[in-house]
Amino acid sequence: MEIAKLRELTQAHSNIDYGVAASVRAGNAAAEAIANIIQSAVAEGRAAEVIALLSDSELGSWVAYTAAVLPGLTSGERKQCITRIKEIALAGGLEATAAKMWLKQQGHVS
Image 1: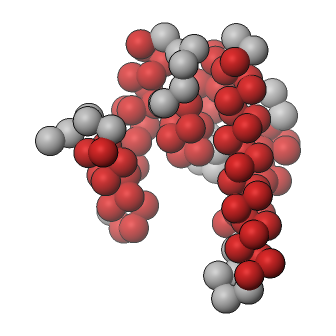
Image 2: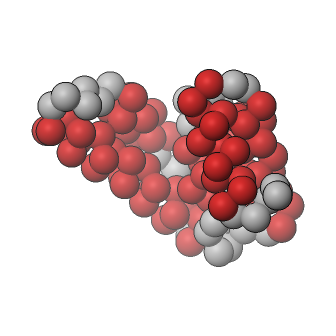
């Protein structure tokens, strides 16, 4: 998998200047590219490589949210993604709020 490319894209996304339309477009393109790389890896039968990135401080949340809804994961792999998102939900801040909303929308909490 293109881990170096994933890291580059996450940096591009994290550096969005929301006051500059071109920066927002570039950030959105980076997010889409991240999702495409993860989706392709899972579709090619490399879900184990993707799941191994869940503990990565930069890539783990991207992997968790993207892979959790993809076909091609085992129930155990999907559970690992959900567990990572639940950890994010416990951390506090805006990311935690977003994780809680995602978990509720996906039916993982009431």
